Length: 217
Image (tube, rainbow, N blue to C red; front, side):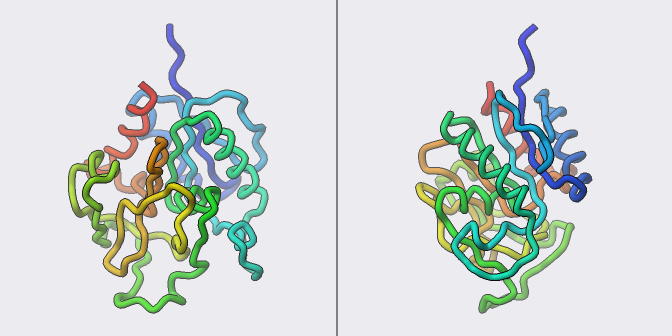
């Protein structure tokens, strides 16, 4: 019997376990084998794809800012190591919320530490419910996955992408112009700012996880 494809899913040691449970369910639904890795885990030597989950902020020093900010340095280190391990092998890499931001930082991009400090036309939402309208850019990989130009999603972030990392392009934005999805121009790398795992009852959000598994076939 052929082994199931193994997808490493990262997260915090004590926080966001609900997120892991939802992601675990959705990946198993599409017949993949998720493996949870937290900052105290032993790094796996062999896996088929990487999904960097949501959670605490990325330390500002990782993108060139020198300011105090609550963060999880150990998690930053292990996720950056896993990213480069997967990147060097050209494995599929995906990111959710913090995970999208980490992809950007790993490729030399930067973040806005706090969205609320930006000059926004509309108030930035913070909600687990699908109350935010996101515009999917045409001719992107994300558009080909979701097959829609707009999607309703949640918003659980206060950091956002500032400067794009090397070979990344914007795939979606919100009504304030804040980047909501990125993808690599050449490699199977995709990150989204919202949390699709909390919206499994909405078909477009399940498509994200189906796509992750399909890249391994």
